[in-house]
Image 1 (spheres, rainbow, N blue to C red):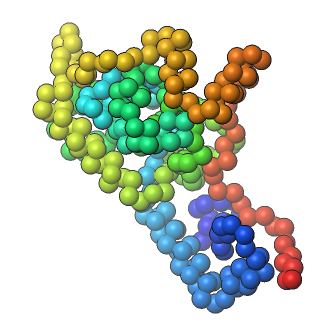
Image 2 (image 1 turned 90 degrees about the vertical axis):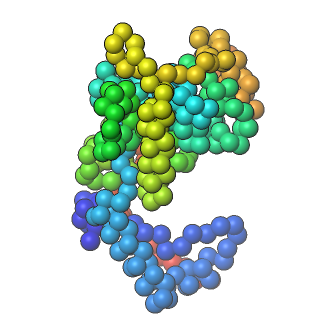
Length: 285
């Protein structure tokens, strides 16, 4: 059943999840019941049904790099990037509700998006290719190529993060090492696609209603006037010292004193691995 997933046609599946202090032998015995095994089988079959039905959301860019170019409204902005497949069409639409600052949602920060994520700020993002259907305005195709489902400012949180699965259209992940595992990154949250579709439709409506203007005969987006912006490294240090948590500020100080660590691509752990052939022995106390 898992031949599509991993080479050895096996896939690991948790029998239980422990939170806090537990009595291991009691919890393990509960996972050996017929009812529990039947539930686990149903969960596996449901997962494979969703996978075969292409119900998960594929990502075109994973941890792409760019900077905020401008805001179309108080909550909708545009990122410009060089990581896109087409250098002439490398803009990414994002919404303030999908932004994370140093691991926290932008909503929890409390500041206005234009102030907390100012124009010129360098960010990373996960993005899908923009939907091409129902595009009544051909100018949109030339202006925006991607839509971000998550934007990260300051640092990367552990979650959200897409999972790489075999096959699919493929994803570009410039910040990760290549481990020879071909596939496509997917977000497995089923409610994400309709949420992004609604935000995309709102963006298209705003463009139709006057957020589009012409520059030398070419279509362009009309941005709001920006009160805050990042124009140089000193501006970025001020922004970072204001919003970064205490432990990150201490780390920044150590890096300043000792010199920053050399930049390298990150190792990728977000893919399915074949089950180990190791046999585990369970001790009953």
